[in-house]
Amino acid sequence: MSVQVLDIVWENISIEISYNSNWSNAYCDIYGHAMGNLEIRSNAGERLPITDTGYRSLFIPVLTIEEQGGPITLIQGWLDEASQSEEWKTYVESNKQLSLF
Image (cartoon, rainbow, N blue to C red; front, side):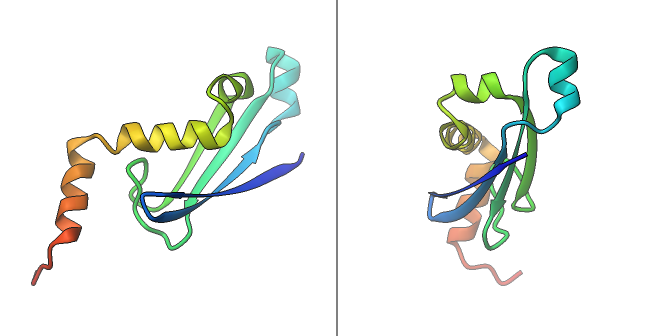
């Protein structure tokens, strides 16, 4: 198994993506296609719209990853879409303001 480590910056947050394009040989033998694993980590543990902890693991068919344009395009699209939620917008706005509490 080889793992690609990819770095991106999304909304001024440095993110590392670890991509294993063949997570399980057994899965491939049973289902006839590879299962990939994407691990997403914000480098300083910052919250992301897809995770409160700055870490997220995703198991997804490699064909889906390829159809989306690869791991970077897939993750950037996922972050962009998730950032449209009211919860994320509220979080971003609350971090712009100083708080005494």
